[in-house]
Length: 224
Image 1: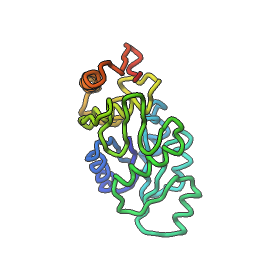
Image 2: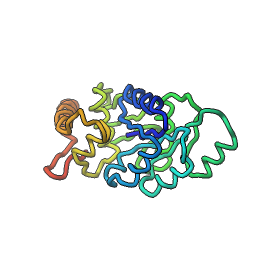
Image 3: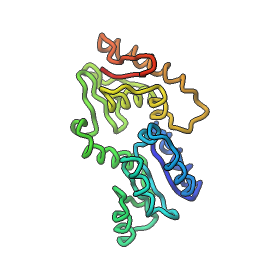
């Protein structure tokens, strides 16, 4: 999930719409609401955030340090105009990257994946994770399963990517839901995760000849 902070609703809603178009959950905050959210949100929700995007807004320079107390996700500042002085100030404040608006969400996704590559030692080359007969990509491509591309609906693809990123761990239904739909999609019930996972498992089983996903009551799901 991506968090967008700006004091203009037009900006936050605009980016939310663009991320949705890429099948990526996001939520927008005003600066004051964002500060409350960072301080009050449970740790298991915070860890589902893939990156924080900070627009030109009041108090922005204080946000990176506040974020770091709760999350190690990349922090990207978005500037309206090019200014060397402002850029240096933002890096000094602790942001991981500075981009000039307008910036396409695909570029943001690519920058975040590049930063994760450098810090995630479990990640293989490029924007991908490989486990046996399954390779998932983080640039919008469908996964390779059993040596061939498997076309998946974007929700199922996001679930597979999330499980592969957390392979070897148990992830709860709530964690899967938050990763795919975002924390604030009240219009969708968590029960939809079971349907998505069931369809994904059936497709993987048909291609591989076995079910690579294990599930246990109270624990959730893990990819073997």
